[in-house]
Image (cartoon, rainbow, N blue to C red; front, top):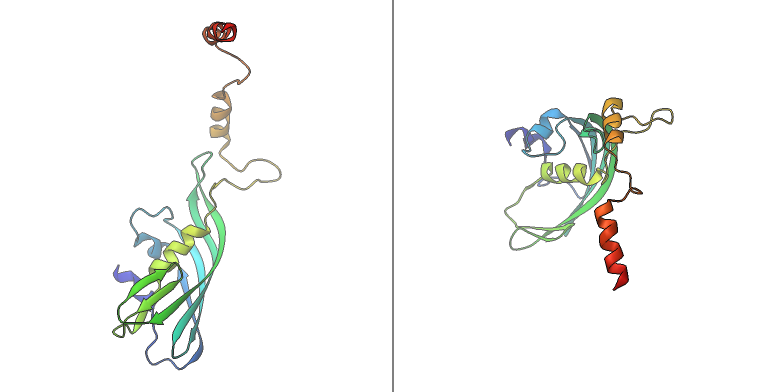
Amino acid sequence: MRGLRKYVIPFTGLKDGNHTFNFILDDKFFEEFEGSEVKKGNVNVGINLVKNPRFIELNFKLDGEVEVMCDRCLDMFYLVIGYEETIYFRFGEESYEQSDNVIILSPKEHEIQTAQYLYEFVHLALPYKKIHPDQNGEPGCNKTMLEKLNNLKIDENKTDPRWDQLKEISDKN
């Protein structure tokens, strides 16, 4: 996780007001997280930090593309993503997560590590079903795999004669 040090935002010493930070999430970023669904990508991150004496507000905006596996044909493809989120940091006795978007920071804290938040936001930006986009009205999936899937399709109108006999018994009762 040493490669994630560049995603740290030191807030001590910043004047009250707005501050902007920009990062790029590339292949090296995603390699730092074992078991990640995303291994490759190029995502631009803009963070607007609003600092005042009582709290810090971080507004995240992510735009880019990541390589994911198609849920239909299992080929890899680049998917365009976008995501926006706001997290509030308040000051308290100890550091802990109060809710999904409110974090309490202890007086010992002087910086915010954003890498984990960015990693989670990329994954939250992924759709539930990841399928190649259509190309000129045709599925963008691997044609060989689509043919195999069509050959394995089950005819739902065809019934098993053994079940038909059992249905007849059931209907009589």
